[in-house]
Structure formats: structure tokens, C-alpha cells
Image 1 (cartoon, rainbow over the protein chains, first blue to last red):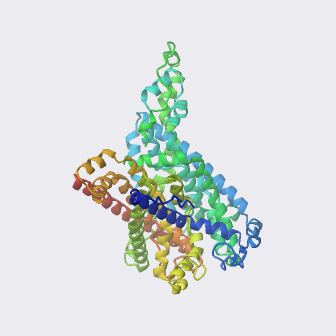
Image 2: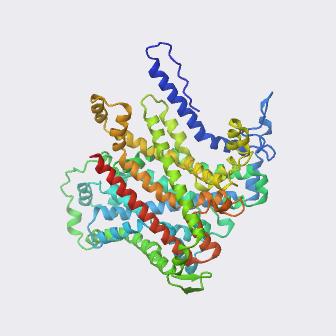
Image 3: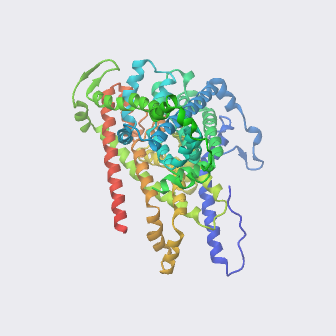
Length: 296
Length: 328
């Protein structure tokens, strides 16, 4: 990693300050390595054969020849795709997380826009009721929603995952706060130019809150990608599983307890898409995420 | 959220268009309707879903908690029977104790570690700040289930990376059983949570540190304040809102702990871990609802959890206010 290889200056006058700087970099470098170690181990473990998996901590090696590259194998990946509908789980996860993210951003921003920029009957009551429900943990809704799904026959369907979760009170308040900053004069000017109210939302309000959308999009996608409890409860057919459900079910299968590499290959592939999305949205993410909390 | 930057990059609305009022003037019927009813249309989908999948289930949950279920269709009224039973149910008390012990240890480690990392990264000597920040934040992108799978093997007795590294320091530690021993299992859960979330806290602290007014530090220096005094009197009050935010949201999240112990102990004979070390309130709720099949008991547990979260959050917010008053 980036343990900083700054040359230690010999001049005695500058020494104390620079030594402190080097020590700081060494500490940060060691901590960063510790933080990344599980990833490095995970990547190594997916290429090891079952026999080497626990024999060598990272990669198989010899004292005289160094790392035995020819002992590395893609067998784990091959078997993962051959034995389990892993590609299907991946597609399911991508579909569900994308559909969830789009619906939650659209619905929250529409409602947030209305609550921030319009005066209409019932507005205050609506906000109070929603604020109240934010205090109640989601587990309270788990059983009644399960009962609802059972009653309307949505168990083991994607509607059960997408429809109830599309309403995010947290997201709605986030958008409302951000859209309070949209200047009224701008909306008025848009109306003068013949913009419909819907276009004002799409072409005026949304572009202004763009940094926040980046952060909210990533958090929503991650939330759906990693969600476990609700999909575990409503999904039954392995062909409909998402990645967390599929992988957690693999843990119990005896074959994978002797061939851990297969499970690890699945885990690595499950983490990658979120990592890619993070790289794409990184700049918006850090600024958009923190700005709200800093102002308290 | 981001009010300052909100007005920055917007095209100027000042556009002298003489005929601009025209579409409004003659579009009285349809045009007037769309602008009058637009807000209702905008909130309608949200409100409909809210009523169907939040408001109704909330009420329904209260009602269900008064019934004893044997499967989704057969149930009978027992009043406050569930609540009365749980007050003396030792498994619930184990779950509550586990959850509280976890929350206390996890929060009292996560906040100082996150702040420590942020303070180090905020030092103006640090180079490659973005690389370090990414290294510490990356684990947050990994979902709970995947973290559990990774740590299940990192902690594997004799073979895992962590026992091996510890064995280098003191050989008998190589044989430590992490997931089979009730005490170690609890430490393992805290360890996995910390790896996952220290970077998350760090990002917030870093943003807060950068927003503390420079002049306050200079003023403190003029007054002859040392490093500790500056930290105590300038930095800490400056990052108070973020600290409160992280403590309150972190505690609420910790009290709902479920996935980590559930998946980590899937292999170790039953999902609750050795001697119920991994039994949390939400896991008990899950077992009652979907393994025992008593939906009513699970609803009652949900409300007990809600009550607990409400009390803890209210207490924390009040305490934070008291500290702020103190500083004035």
C-alpha cells in the first residue's frame, strides 16, 4: 500500500517535525494495510485450490521458489457458475437494486419537492405523521407486511420486495431539506416561460440537488444490494434469490465447507459491483453525504 | 442538505421576455388545473404506498401483538399475554443483555477510532489523503452478509488469518476458538462491525473537522493553549453535531443487530452461536416469527424494541443538549 517512502532528512534542525510526519505516515500505512487485509486475503483465497486453502495464509509459496503461481486456479469460479445459479442471482440483484434505487429516488424527490415548494391542504399533518413513523424501527412492520404479502399472494415475487420499500420517509425528508434551497423566483420564472409543474421538478429542482442525489443513490443501491432480512423472508425459489440470500444458503451446504474457495469467489464477485458504483459516484458521495450532518 | 451550493450553478432566471406571461393568461382551464393539483399528484404515489405499507402495518402490528398465532391463519386473542410472558422470559433477557453489551462496546470503540483516524488524516502533513480515505472507507461498501462470510473464515480456529497472526505473538493464541467460545464470539461480532463501520464515521468526522473555524484555533494559540486544550475547547465543541448524529444513528443501528451474528454462526450449530452468545433482540424476533411461527409474539417483541430505541435515543439527544449548555 502507500506507506510513504519519504526520505528522512539529515538536517537536524528540521528533524523533529519531519520525524513526526514520517511516524504519522507509517501508522496510517499500517492501519490502511490492516483495513485492506481482508480484501487482499479474499482475492487470494478465490484462486487457491481446496488443498491449499487453509495451508497457506495468502498465496501458496515455497521457501526457495517464492510464490507458486502455477498452483493458482480458476476452478473455484468455474464450479461456482456450474453448481449454483450464481449468474442468475447476480442479475436478480442488479435488477432489484436498480429498480429500487430509481423508484425510491423518483418518489422521494417528487414528494420532497411538493412538501418543500408548495402550500397545500394536509401538508403539515402529512409531515408530522411521517416524522412520527421514522422513530419506529422497521422490524415492527416485518410481520404485518409479511401477512399482507401472504394475503394478496405476493410471497415469492419481486413485487413484495420492490413495492413496499419504494416509500422511504428518510429519503423524502432528505429531498425536502435540499429542495427548500431551490429559489422560488426560479420556479416562478419557469412558470412564466410555460413550464409545467412536472417539468419544474425535472428540469429546475432536480439539477439543483444533484450532489445529494449522488450520495442518496449510492446509499439506496447499497441498502438494497445488501438487504437480507426481508428478501430472506419473502423469497423461496432459489432462481429468484439475491446474492446475500444465495450465498448465505451456500454456507450450509457440506460441499462448500470443504471447498471454501467457491464461497469466497462468490463473495468477491458480490462485493465488486458496489465498489464500481462507488468509484463512479465517489466525488458526489463524500461531499453530499457529509454536508448535511456537519450543519447538524 | 446542501444549501450553499444550491444556488451556485443555476442559470440566471433574469430573462427579459415580454410575452412570457402569455401561456398563463389564456390557459385558464387545463393549465390552471395542472398547477393547482400538481402538489397532490406529486405526493399521491408516496402517500398511497405509505398508507398501505407503513401506516396500516403499524396499526396492524399493535393488534397482532395481542394474538397468539399458530401459522398465519390460526390465531386467538390473548390480550397482553405476550408482553407479560416476555417480561419473565430468560431468553429475551439474554437477547437484551447481548444487544446492550454489544452496543456499548461497539459504540465506545467505533467513535474514538473513527475520530482518531479523521484527526490523523486531517493533519496537514498527510499526503495521499484520498488513498488512505478510500482504504479506510472501502469496508463500508461490503454488506453485512458478506462481512460475516469473510470473518467466519478470517477467524477460523488454527487456520484463519487472525488466529495465525496472534499465534506469532503468543503461540497458544493460535488455538483460540473465536466462534465456539461465548466470550470470544461476542468480541468477534464487535470486531467485524468495527471493520465495517469505522471508515463511515471517519468520513463524517473528517468533513466536520474541516468545517471548524480556523480563526478559533488561532485565537486559542494567541491565548497560549496547548494541543490538548485546543482539542478539548475548540475541536470537540466544533464537531459536536456530527458526534451526536453518529452516536444516535449508530446506537439505533446497533440495537437492531441481526445479520452479522445470524450469518457468522450459521455453521456453528444453530444461528444463535455458542450459549446464545449471538442471540440479539431482532434475531429472537425472527425466530419467534418465522421459526416458531408466532407472528403475534414477534410483533410484541418489535414494539418492545421500538420502546427501547425511543428511550435510548431521547436520553442521548437530551444528554448531548446538556453538554452543549454546559459549554456555554
